[in-house]
Image 1 (cartoon, one colour):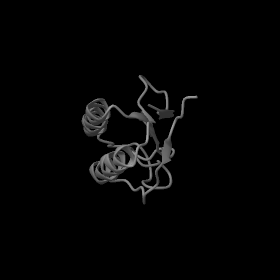
Image 2 (image 1 turned 135 degrees about the vertical axis):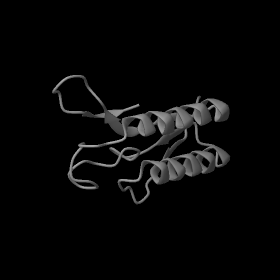
Image 3 (image 1 turned 45 degrees about the vertical axis):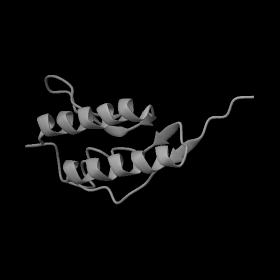
Image 4 (image 1 turned 180 degrees about the horizontal axis):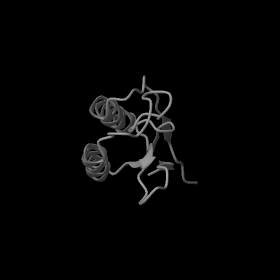
Amino acid sequence: MSRLTVATCQFPVDADVVRNGRYVMRQMLSARERGADVAHFPEACLSGYAGADFPSYDGFDWELLERVTRQVLALAGELGLWVVLGSTHRLTGDHKPHNSLY
C-alpha cells in the first residue's frame, strides 16, 4: 500500500510577492522535513489577491512574480516535493489575469 503525505500550508498573504515567496519556501522546507510528498498552498498566496490585498493589477510587477515563481519551482525540484501553488496568471491583451494553480 502506498501513502501520500500532503502538507496544507497557510500564512498571512499580502501584496508583497517577495515576502509571500519567503513564506512559501520556508513552509516547503518544513513540509519536506516532516515527510510531506506534496505541499498545498491557498488561492493567490504568491501573488496576493487583487481587490483584497491590493486595489488592482495596475502597475503590478509581473516580472517579479515570474522570478519568485521560478525560485519556488527550483526549490521544489531540489526538494523532490510536489507543490500546489496559488497565484495569478497574466493573460494577453485586455483579458483580466486569472486566479491559477501552479
